[in-house]
Amino acid sequence: MDQSTYDLAAKVGQSLIQRGWMLVTAESCTGGWVGQAVTAVSGSSAWYERGYITYSNTAKCEMLGVQQATLDRYGAVSPQTAQEMAIGALNCSHAQISVSITGIAGPDGGTAEKPVGMVCFAWAAQDGLVQQETHYFTGGRETIRRQAVVTALEGVLTMLSHAAATA
Image (cartoon, rainbow, N blue to C red; front, side, top):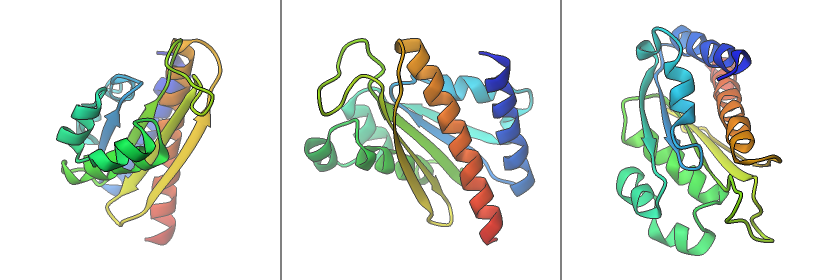
């Protein structure tokens, strides 16, 4: 992991500690890289509650409560699935904020509608706020996954800023 990602994870940790909140992650295409980034920070047990790696659709349903109907209608890589993953992770944990990631890191698996590099994110907070974004990253598999980790962490900071502004 590069220094800038480590620094970003540490900043997320500081922001979570200030609020007294814990983070839960739900990852698909990143395979636990967000969890790895946050646990690289010493003391992360004070603010990182748990992580789910739900690579298969079955895991998304069984572990996070993603509805099969959502997967059938929109697919695993969709804003709708990312949102259900984020809400499910929050509901299946003791955390106050979650981030989810589902995407196509490549080099295979892309289509015209869902190309390689398409990654859907969602963030959910205990106050009911849910945000989602879809990004289209470029580069190889590792590059796409690294960009997704940074985007996920940046989104947590954005959610925390919003929560602080409305508190």
